[in-house]
Image (tube, rainbow, N blue to C red; front, side, top):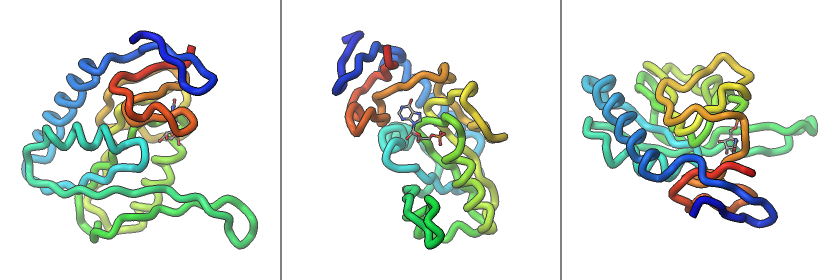
Length: 176
Ligand code: IMP
């Protein structure tokens, strides 16, 4: 299907499932090569990254570990919106981390995660993102491994949602 409707919005197909799988395989091959002498810890950012992580992991052949994190928002004691990184139970000291994201848009999320991880004595931190919107980026952070660079339009599918829906689509769709 090239056009779909989710709730009140219409989307058209932008990246086909086969093309996504090709990119996933090639990213995995690069990681297998780059980390062949290391034991990286993959950290997926929930919810969006779960499908990319699962597909990527099937093609990772080097010894490695896996974890997931989530950014939870809460209201601080001074009333402002605060963020907190939750879910990383592994000791990340001196570990080689690969952050796995569905999409880097403004970069706010990955900037926050990188700043938090920098407080720990990690060996290295790299970023793998299925989608990257360079035109929307507000920070000096770029994915080390990118699936596709896309224009700054709203997309759904392959883990990404519109109002909670569409994460289960195998292709990626863009808002019409
Ligand atoms: P950033 O912090 O602006 O880089 O955005 C990161 C998060 O916003 C992603 O992990 C997604 O959950 C969400 N997001 C950004 N762009 C889109 C989009 O086009 N579709 C769906 N979710 C998006």
